Amino acid sequence: MKPSEKIIKIPKQPLAVIAYETIIKKIICLEYQPSQHLEENQLVEELGIGRTPIREALVRLQGEKMVESHPNRGVIVRPITLQNTKAMFESMHIFEFGVVDVAINKDCSTFIKKMNQSNEAVKKAILSNKVFNLVEANHDFHMNFAKCSQNEFLIRAVNDVRKEAKRLSFLSYNNIIDPKRPLEIHYKSVVQEHDQLIDSLCKKDETRLKQLLQEHIETFRQRIIIFMTS
Image 1 (tube, rainbow, N blue to C red):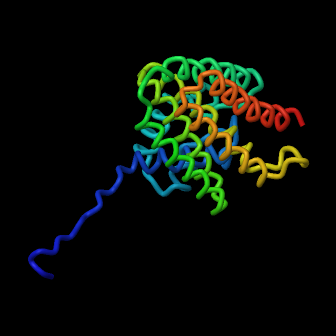
Image 2: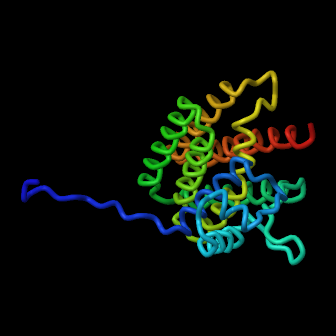
Image 3: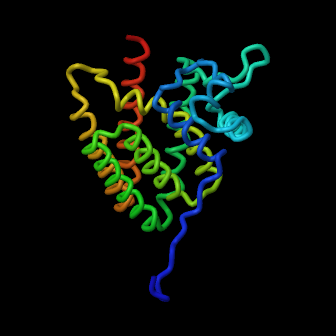
């Protein structure tokens, strides 16, 4: 090795982080079903990780309301119900319209650039047919949109709602919910709507931005309602 050459060591992630990321991916992708009991011994065996990191991961997931702890049932994956789904979409509408109200008067250029990058990641995930990556890229897009508000309380609120929406996003992106609307058409529409949201934000067109946002959320809501009631 030449004196000028250096070995770059990539730090290993703590086991609790690995456990958290593995479990949350399985929850989002519905490998762990809503209301499923997460047995500690099973997780240790399945993930090949010790009890302490598993417990730390479950505590973190409980704090994020991805799992629930019940005295007689232990830890279960948070259920998806019509009631909490309805509440989620109501909150999404309120908070993201609030983002528009605040962001419309601010310099959003930094976050608009990041929104464009997120939408490119959406396109890449679609082309590679990686639904989990699509869910994550879509989440990033909406979080960069929330950051346009430059308001930590709104950003936190949108993050809570959008995390709750990830499993529903996976359902929407992974299932042919409407036979008349193939997934390819749905994917194309999502990308176009994102581009339109960016364009309206650049132009500071508040009316158009809220109209597009309303349509974007409503399309998502209708797909989930059809799925849950079919």
